[in-house]
Amino acid sequence: MLPKLELAHAWLVKAAHDLETGERALAEPPMADTACFHAQQAVEKALKTVLVLREIDPPRTHLLGMLLERCGPVDERLDVLRPQLEWLTAFAVEARYPDVEGEPTIEQAREALAVARRAFEIILDNVPNEVRP
Image 1 (cartoon, rainbow, N blue to C red):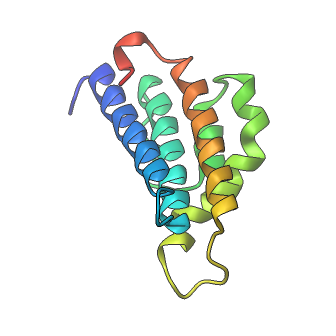
Image 2 (image 1 turned 90 degrees about the vertical axis):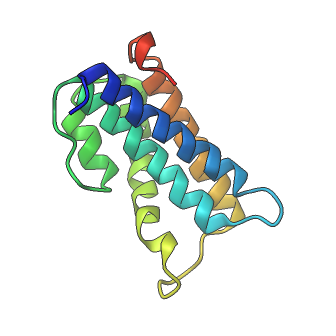
């Protein structure tokens, strides 16, 4: 097992990669489903960074509300984002499969990435410098 700061850094790097992948997915031709999936993944991994820093084993879940709850107090700005984070949770699974109702739109993908970027930046503001990507 990696030391705590190293593991937290690794989670945050993965989150940054997901955010970048989501943003690239909106290039031409845009792939809204892929962008939404990676937006959710970015937030999930960023929240798991917080858990690692608090010496809590990250659960194997995509439920962003549950992860936020397990983190405990982080930053009131994240609490304000809770409804949007819970909205993002659906993209962890549904956006990956063709047999669910309603493909995400480009506008939903843009909104998902904006929420993910906001959450990622808030989490960056609350981690030690050596954890940042």
